Image 1: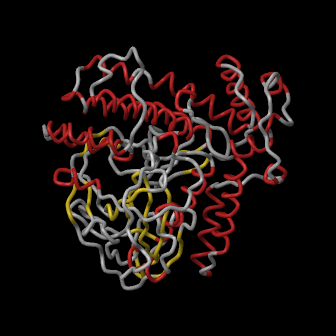
Image 2: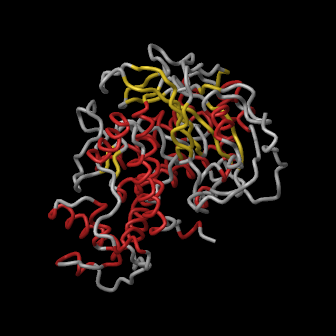
Image 3: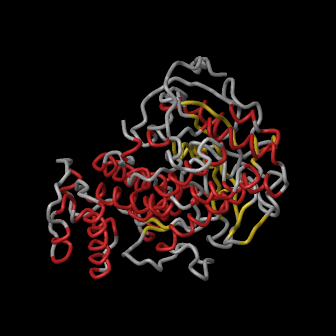
Length: 486
């Protein structure tokens, strides 16, 4: 069907590491690579996509379609693949619904898996990075339980906004690649119903969860567990553990060290962005360190550690200020799941690195977003503390704070004192001269959705995406740890 999509042989492009994955995507050839087939026999079930009554393309990510060689597809061809789910050339012949378990609000649940999504395709980008196309709202699977396997159009719009904003703020996130409205009426308890339906495609660096490992450990499938660890090390390459780390040559230990680094950076990126994920269960924690699966998310209206995103989070388990601890707890569950493959001591040593790595990532990312060069751990920690105090006292959210004080400007009191000796890295990008920053507060999200729901007006969404991308251009790439540069 696609004469303009010719798979290319894998070239000698060096394999990208996790810390190289935030750069502006560059156009690349289409390079299918169904590496998931190595482990599909114990990780997934072949499924059929739903047949929808209509297919109307509502969003196509024109930055990332080119990065995986799909930029030349016509809209008709696009819908054929990402609305009707005809296989991409030389790719997976049938979609795969992944199996996993997970702690959901710290209660173990073995009855979960991909209930309204599947893995549709895998390909490599120009840097050699393996990427997955995964769906949401594509129909029922063996793990749907009582669900209908569908996604509301509002849910898809919310995920467009969340992923665009996070990407611009330097958070390592899945990308919303496509949204197709599907012409069904859905009934939901948390939305005015009936409401419109959609199917969404995410582009991400993988869908292997902490819960994927938990399932294999619970079923005592140790050989498959070892094979999954090897797959992750090959698919998501990273640096070796520190020289003095015990068991540093064991695959399970290497993997836990790498995931600890990724998740520590992820936790810090959430905090510096002022983002509240809302549902940090182990089935929502990706081994690649990539944030994904956005449900009741929020951005902070002001700096408030107790702020929660999900109305059902009655205890505040995943409140804004508790997110680092929640992610650290999830990392601990991965260590437990890897116990059949390694002794406790080297796994604990890897787990213990999370706290210091998180602290370093907070200082590194904080200075980056504020637009100043790092001075040293003591000075940077004092700066973070002074900034948090300034936000609490002024009842200011992170977006407004970082924009107002970009490059250290307009600081007063303890914040001004903490900024003494810091050098600005501010650019002359016109974004920094705007009166107000791009933001994503819940009332703004509702206004964007109301325009779509009431008038089928998509211009406010398009305008907000453009404003967010402008902010991302002004900020540039998030910083890498010093040991990963070059």
